[in-house]
Image 1 (cartoon, helix red, strand yellow):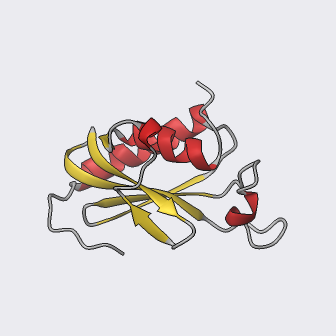
Image 2: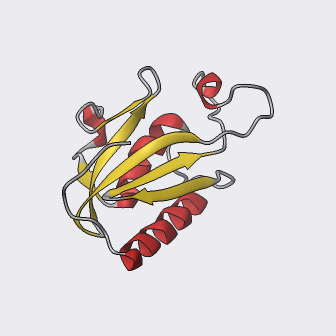
Image 3: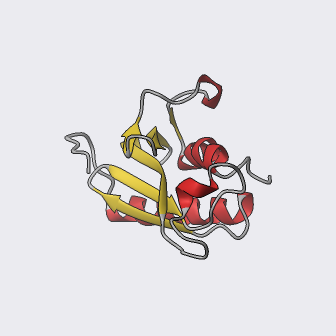
Length: 128
């Protein structure tokens, strides 16, 4: 896991952001279960539903197996609405804050923007 010396969200911010992420997933990707966890300045989001594309093989190891697949890491920037967005790179099993596709827009945004970008890449665009 990455180390950060920057600001860390308090528990109320963590709880609120977790609720926002879960609600946004329900609205944008119905039926997709998300796992949210926090560590230091980071918020990690994984999904349990495999993608319906050629990426499906990356999200499960065996048919019917439910294993969380990391899709998003947020780095706290001092506000519940300002996070540095990182996408999971399955090829190297690492996170990248600098290699987001240009179409994603700014690398800093809300948790919902981070989900739209990264879940949109791995699963498909949100349904809202």
